[in-house]
Length: 134
Image 1 (tube, one colour):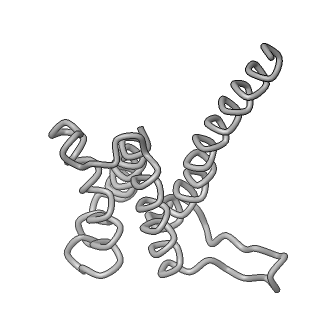
Image 2 (cartoon, helix red, strand yellow):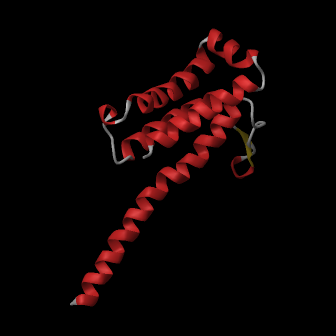
Image 3 (cartoon, rainbow, N blue to C red):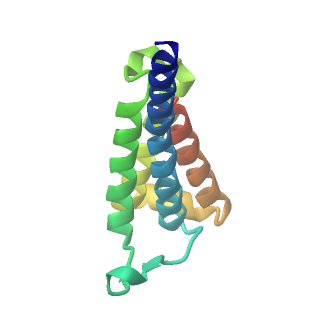
């Protein structure tokens, strides 16, 4: 009986570890897409799918999708349970991602201090993701 209990406890721990691995794996895509969107990475090409090259639109949509999944799978899940500075970072990430893609002023602002503006935008997005998955 003790062996069965121990085995099911280990299984539960393994399931939890895999659940936390999903946001981490999605984070790799998120960081790569953010690097690409803000100019830190040249156009990624996926050779398996007939040489598909990632577009900035797909990077933006993928980043936003991953950010939503990460926030939904976080242990907190309620925006009000984050501290104010954390809320700011979480909100800044999609604003920067969407603003850089659709609002000329944001794109100009980020690109004016090249490469430091692009690096700052990437760091803000990465920090927003890190806070969202906690």
